Length: 374
Image (cartoon, rainbow, N blue to C red; front, side, top):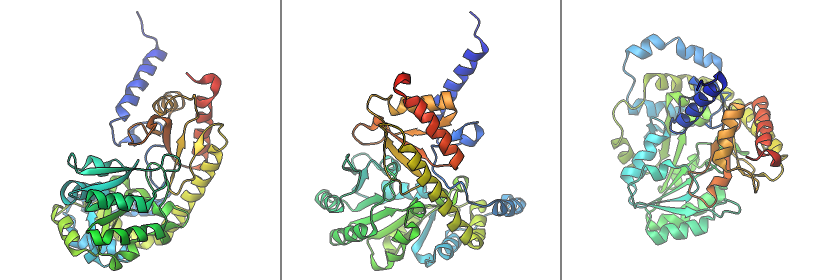
């Protein structure tokens, strides 16, 4: 039996789709619209990229600087003493040290970024379920559970991934006070905070000096749009925690391209602020457009992505993801792998440009049409 060109192309696409499920990146090598990974499309500007490229000869041939010097660069960029800054090869490197080597008992609200659980030894993590009706964090109940189980590290991701919801700053400060007498460090992951309505003004970075049980972690890949450079940092005034984190890093954990970016980024602060404003505007419009899909429950985003519950009777999140890719060349993330009730009913979609967001809304409407639910 001869396989026709259409059937062969369909088989290739199916194979490509299955491979993406475990790829964890490299999407730029494939020709589809990526509404899965969460990063700033408007930063860095082309002038910074060109400037970085002009240094490629020296960056390839020479060793980068070590941790102390890189911490100076990040500290200068965020207005913190370098003694409080630990720089990782992406936030994931720091998360692995915290979950895998520092925390004895870690508690984290779920659903959330899976790596905090994945990086921890079996039996060392307590998952605190968020209220499925709102996905908002009750900090008093969370603190009570942290104290009850004897957690020495509590993690809050805000805005959260995948829900795109933020925990108010006042609530986090109350949580810090509740945990302090129980020798529990609060790690606040603010990787998406620059995209929130109040932006960086909600950050707890400026509070670390007043709270020795506070650590703020951030993936620069998301906000600064530099996924390939792999830069993340943690800020804390807890000298013991900082020492233990530095002890888990190897001497050249940050490459020369990332180092050079940090040197250049200081001259592009206003460009960065403006880029985040553009992201917020696009995501707000995306949210409003999604509200027009009948039966879709759309949560008001505080990050650069939107979290939705699919209509009753619609295909599962995994099926919606598959059909959007195969039929509309667009990739989103279903939430079937998240710890939450009815996880197969939820999807997470990154905001891109206005035109790309509009195209996704149209495609999603077609996939969810009652007469077209396969």
